[in-house]
Length: 359
Image (cartoon, rainbow, N blue to C red; front, side, top):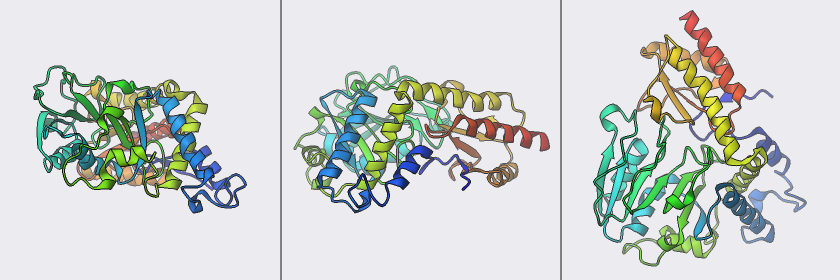
């Protein structure tokens, strides 16, 4: 069996160790005689899986007791509606638009109240993070919303915005568990797991308890109330049980590797290899302002569409797959999440050098 180097932005590469373990347990999970896929989510065995997953995540991120961890469905995109439905008490919220997903969240919020765009980097194709140290945030805004790492454009907030006392809500889908994080700075920190944590189908929401109330917007469906899921400990209805089980394995893998400090070091090392090459290359160039570069998603171009296409094709033949940039921006993008080994990045850079010499 030969595995490729998978640079996909999501669903993305998972730790091989985790995949092997789930394969071993596929038919018989720890002597239960059945797969986790077949198991009742109300069973003792499964209850232990989801509770262990939660406690491992709490330990990894140092999540305070006054925050709930919810394993939900509907992806990050469903949160674009769920957040205003639950938090927009004054029918007003501030949005910082630094990419396509922040923009979609901003557009969705307009269905529920006044979404105020307080900063944006759309003027330069989202290639930088705007200065958020002194934004004009409406006094009565219910929250300030950001997408912390922009998967498509490869930008990342290095400093959180000054929210001037307002609740910060952050979509961290593509930088989840890539580095240590101070959860207390956020009211809600959430993300789809299919980039850095597990298979598609689960979204994890970490939410401060005071934001979980009965007082949601009129007409909010039961399934879209945070309180419904918090009260039922993510078991109000059948959760994405198998996906949560795999996430739990990934949490254990990260713990075993040494936690989020170690992840950050590893990720900085990997990103440096690629960015250093891009900075001296005569053919390839990065598309993001240096100080705003993501450790997770690295977009780059040759400046020639045909050459870009040739590169993607030859890279795939050489075992480096999913390097084509998002359809909205073109070019290339290497997503180098936690589970991408350093040697994958080194070999990619060696391949890029060779391609540069030949073209």
